[in-house]
Each structure stands twice: as structure tokens, then as C-alpha cells.
Image 1 (cartoon, rainbow, N blue to C red):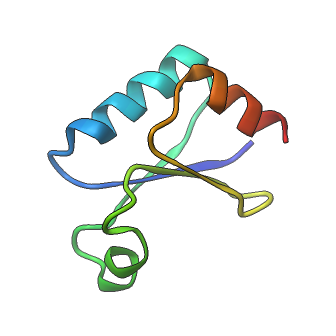
Image 2: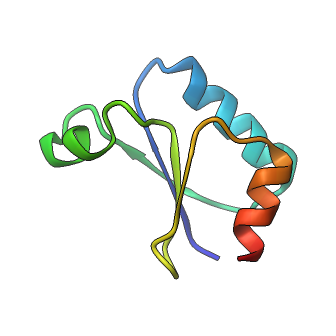
Length: 75
């Protein structure tokens, strides 16, 4: 499954999200940095980190834990 993690530079919540994804063994994900992209900044500025499934477009906003990530991936 293809995943994108929208995040910012020097974001401790984003670091925690990466840890949760590793803990969950969610697989590879594409990090998408929003800092230099005005469109992404507008869409995700207050929401990061956000996990998106490429196949469905579904998004999971922070805060999430391993249980929520597993459920999100099974949807």
C-alpha cells in the first residue's frame, strides 16, 4: 500500500508519527514536506502530521497511535 506522510521540518509531532508508523510496521511511506509548497501549506498547515492512503485518498490526522493506524490501513 502506498502511503504519504505530510509533515514539516523540525516538527516533533511529525517525528512521533514516523515512530508510530515504524512501530506499526506500516511499510514504506513517502514523506511529503509542506514547508516550501504554498498549496500544501494551505491544505495541511495546521493539521500535520497527516497520513494519506494513495489508493483511496483517505487521510488520518494526528494524533494517531498504532491501533488507529492499523484500523486505517484495513479500511
